[in-house]
Structure formats: structure tokens, C-alpha cells
Image (cartoon, rainbow, N blue to C red; front, side):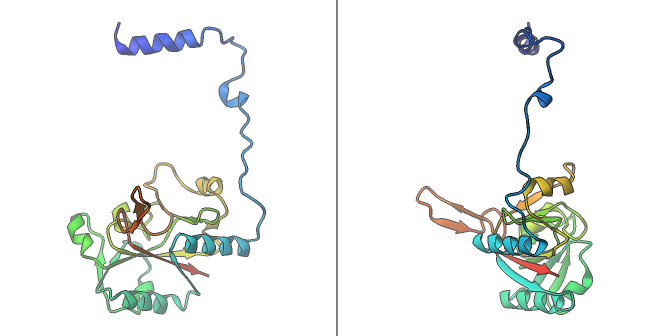
Length: 213
């Protein structure tokens, strides 16, 4: 008897007392989870997102569509960014007010090359207010996962209120499980046993979020 047969035999013995008319597991277990905690207007949901993003030490900015290029330009200039990484589908007008060299994401670029890029600008798929989380799904305005993980400075543009939801369950309804999802809650950080916080370990040291709307 091999390992597979041994495991299946144990499963059969465990199910021996289950009668044919017994309700399936997925029907027998009630799943009455809260879909969100409290009821909020769209404006209140955006405010909660901004509050939780700031609590995670992300830098939060707000602007309208016409002000966006100037704001992106100021943020890049404030960082002294000489090169900015661009996903293939990012609106070109978003960077019309910066002199930084635009570096398109190329499959041939190595992690070492991307590490020399000062900043990256992306959109997002959805933002979760209750957890202060941004989710990228690899869409054209977000690019491959590595573009938001290697550069030290990430500017993420969130269209509000359309891309903002209250809770994780609501976000999951909008996301496809087959896409490469990156969940971002603040800048990358970790701490040792003495709780000394170190930022920029597994991703960008600085996360700036623009609430566009």
C-alpha cells in the first residue's frame, strides 16, 4: 500500500458514518459574516480610507483630474526623482508636468536595473477603507507586480469614490482570483524581536496615495 492509498483509506473510514441524505458541509455551516462594519456614505468611506492609509504611514494627497499632473510632478520633484517607472497603460497625461526620465516597464529589465529607478507611478484596482489597503491586479495602468515592489518610492492613484469599497468581502467581489494580486497596506515595513521598525525591506520605503476625484 502506497501513501496515496493510505490517505484515501483514512478519508473513507472518517466518512463511513455519513449517511447519504446528510446535508453537504457547505450547506450545514452557516456563513453569516458581516460584509462591512457599520453603514457609511461614499464620502465617509473615502474619509475612512484616508484615515487608515495615514495610520499605516502612507502619505495621502487629494486632487481633481486637472490638478493631478502638477501634483505628481511636485511629488517626484520633492523626492529628487530622476527616473520614474511607468506601467504600459498608465495615462501619459499624469506625468506631463515632470522632467523625470520615463522608464517603461520592460520584461528584459533586471531587478538591479529597476532598483536604480527612483519612483514608480501606478493606478490601482480597488482600495479597501476598513483596512487601509490598496490592491493592484496587474491591469495595464498597474503593470507587473515587480514594478510596485522594487522602486523605493511608489505613487498610487486611486479614483474616488469608484475604486473605494468598505470591506475585504466587497473588494473580493471585484477582483479576479486568476490575476496577480498585490495587497498594499502602507509602505513596506518589518520589525525585529525588539520591535525596531525598519521600512523599505520588502517593497517601497515611501508610499504616496493620491485620492483622485
